[in-house]
Structures are given as C-alpha cells and as structure tokens.
Length: 213
Image (cartoon, rainbow, N blue to C red):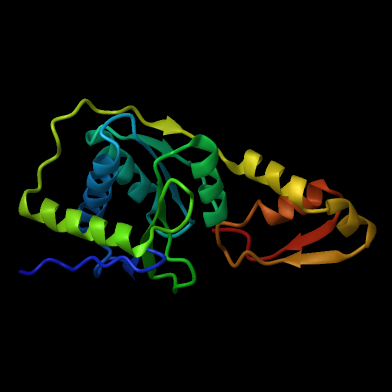
C-alpha cells in the first residue's frame, strides 16, 4: 500500500485526523523534520514544540518530543495551547533552531496539522519544506532512528514574555482611557488567555465568549 504523500505548504501540512493525519504519518513527518534540523546543526540543536487546543494535541506534542530527543535534538515543550505568533517569538528569544506547531489554523475542527518554523520564527520557506519532504522520503526508505545520545526535554512557557512584549508596543493606557468595552471571541482557539488577559490587566472592560476547549 502506497504511503501518504506529505506535502508542506506555506503554513505547513494539514489533513483530517484519522484519515491522513494519523500517528504513523505524523511519525514520518516528525522524523523528516528532525533529520532536516540535524542536517543544519550537527549537535546542540533545540526545537520548540507547541500546539493549539485541537483534539490529541498533547499526544502529538509528546510524540514530537520523543522523536526529537531520539535524534539528539532538545525538545522545548509548551504545555498549554499557544498562538502561533507566541511560538514564533519564543523561537527568536530562546535562539531555537525552529519550532513544530501542531495546528490546522482556520481549517474545520476535524483537521489538524504541523507547522514548521525556522530559526527566524517565520514559516519555513519552500526550499526548507522541500528539504523536509525529501528527508521524509529518505526516512521511508530506511526507517531507523539515529544512534545518538537522547536529549532531555525541557519545558518552556512563553506566555509571560510574549505579553510583556505586547505591553511595550501597544499603548494600553489609551485603550483604557477611551472607556471602550470589548467583547473578545477566540473561537475556542489558542488565543484564549492572551488578548483578554492583556486588556483585563490594563483595566479594560472585557467579556470573553467561546474561550474554553
């Protein structure tokens, strides 16, 4: 039986859970990413692992952590759902070699996906995604983990530093003085506890809807 072709677009690879987005295919994609990162940095690499609140996100992050570790890459795991810009900012601040983000962005809830960001925190460009796809094919031909010492996973919580940066670049006093009352709808997504918390801490009246999983 032919294996699913994993193609990374501008914002990653997305598919329906349990159809093409299976644990088997996720393993293949993650080994491809790990092989690519190792090709760019022979030792001492570290990659942030994050997710949105979609189904099985915690399990996918744990799988990514195990696979990165088996390649000698230090996984820096974000425990709670985090918005993509937060993960991008964390890549830059921690000087990581990239980030794996389990999210299908705007796609319907039956989807999930994998975004890979490069060390600049930006979405991987076509030359990178093509290299990852080649590494996936190479792994398919010889599905072996490298004989390397395992790297120990680390925990990272970028929320505080990201919100701190937003306070530096957004004039929250003007928003507060305006007296505006805000309704915030994160659409059950990973922004819950970010925009609303930032405004509430600044003394702005905020009511949130759809802010639970």
